[in-house]
Image (tube, rainbow, N blue to C red; front, top):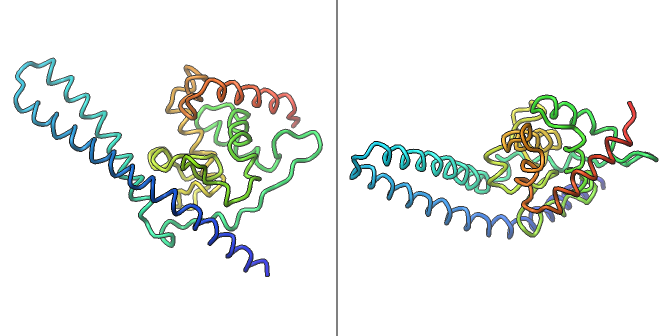
Amino acid sequence: MYKIFILFSSLLFLFIGDSVKASNLAEYKKQEQQINEQREQIKQELSEVDERNKKIKLTMKDNELAAYQEAYKKAIEYIETPITRQQYIFSSFTPVSLSPGELAPREYIHYYKAAGEKYGIDWFVLAAIHKIETDFSRIGLKSMVSTAGAIGHMQFMPATFAAYGVDGDGDGVISPWSLPDAIFSAANYLSISGYSKDVRKAIWHYNHAEWYIDKVLATAAGIKGAFRE
């Protein structure tokens, strides 16, 4: 009976996510095409320009667009890949409960700390984002696709996860539905977004809102203060 329930939950989740993924796929293909057109225009300009500084600026712009284009290509490939090849593993995940006095599940803290140490991120900030995004993954699997299209335990947009996702548990699969992958990917994203230089700006990249930054930092402070080794 338990296996039947897991299978039913998985199928229901995928059904809900299909419409979101379809709309994202169309948008990603549109954006990738627009970037490709911009790069073609730059290529044409480069063939006509002799001024060295102008060539440098155009080349730098093309390199920037190339990075964005690659991210969209990865996101498109990620969404179009059959489920059997994506190797979703969310059906094996069992949420944990908070013990009295805990503000973050003790079972997850080793993930936060390991990811934090690897990428230079305060572990309690990772815990705070996990809390705010999916209530430590306790919201239910079928709710881990937001109306905006964010997916998984730490709520990445597919294009962002395609660009910054990492294999946190070393199983050879990079999946937003794997808790360690999601946490390590969040740490990687914050690191690349300049966490070591400006914590607020890095968190802003996660969600472009001042209230979100304030909420993450306040939640992080509470988690840090409540934690006891």
